[in-house]
Length: 598
Figure 1 (cartoon, rainbow, N blue to C red):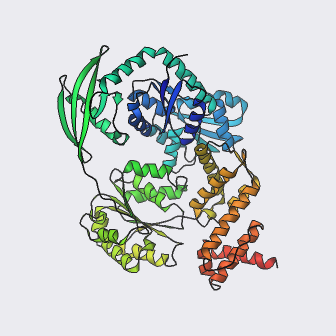
Figure 2 (cartoon, rainbow, N blue to C red):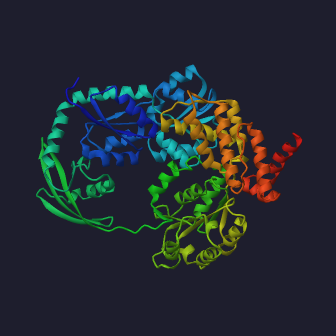
């Protein structure tokens, strides 16, 4: 065993692995481990931002490990996928038989031959070598009759972008432990090299400003750049041909900041290195405005994949229609209840559109303040009068009648819609006037329209989503919930879900938090759904002093809430159904059961 400590960087492709890495690292006191989250290109960028700590090696997995080997000169130890890891994913997906598709980099298939002999599951494996190849493979199998789709991180991410359901194959404790044992052996063999890197670090630390060192091939050797300047590394790498052997100066502007850099070659241990000593000068900042958000493509992808609506599932006709919308320059109006993923649909349109490399500007009419509204409709530099952007104007039902008329008029002039791609969204449950508002845009702007269905209309989808949320929260919390009682799943499928994906996300997170062991129970599910109904009652009857008794069966609470809201609305069935987020037919059935039980 070595006397000195090994400084290691771990790039975990998902948050759950970070927790396991931290736990297993306690068994290896000789490894000083720093853990960051990122996969593929984002993982490489995270590694670049943390590289100034002079690590001895990097832990990662699959395609991210391959990219890291290309970008860095230090050893990259790959965390594998064991037979147990694949079995755990199959159990979580509730798969005991049938055909399963597996898509990912080559290393996830090493244990498949043994599993084929042990299980009554037919595995169809599709190895890939890049994200582009993952998309091609997934497109070719999207409509095949597979029981489940199992993926590594990049294929899972690509499947999510395409609107396909998939389960992530995660690496367990034993796989991580094996990687750390391999790291110990590698670092013992590379002891001399690590000492040379330490000497190089000491040599460079005497200079002012921030220092970046590359080898002649552009591989990053050393960096003290602030983590917020990761993209500056790529800019400096492109300047390598301009660096001369003698010390020289370089002045440049990058993302509204001026820099001065002293550049030179240095020779160390028989190798040549290119050095940049960088100092920032004047920096310009853009003003922030409440309710108006500017995102680039990378930020939109991050929100699409990891935001609140990451598990919104669009069916095949909706995905096909969104692709057509993205190709059409006409404005788009997205309608749906609260929580149906209207923002997710807008981002999917943007990411499939021709302007995806231009800004995505989100204007939230529910949050915007008066001074920012005045800026939006009258300033020469307002996003409405800019060129070449995607405008996502959401919650337009929150505007006053005067503001709504002004917005429609500005958009109807044609300038904003001709110079930009415009997407609007209306919530059909936040205002009784949603139909009239939607008609104003549809008639004046000649919009294409997209109506997103509520969750309760597809009980089969709810069951699939529950398992996907369980998978997500397991990875996030480090828990290993793998079963849900049949009665509990039945309750979830029959629930009204007036807040749709927002509410489902919240409920499953609470179920995972309260679960003891590996099972989500009927009792926990009924209790949490009762509390959700109680909060719905409080919201719908804010003016009422009635207190709901939640100690009774869930079916009785459903009926009482329907009657209470009906009474609060003066017997108006249409208004009551809209308040509860259900159809008049569903309301009628609830009330009829109440009468039948008398």
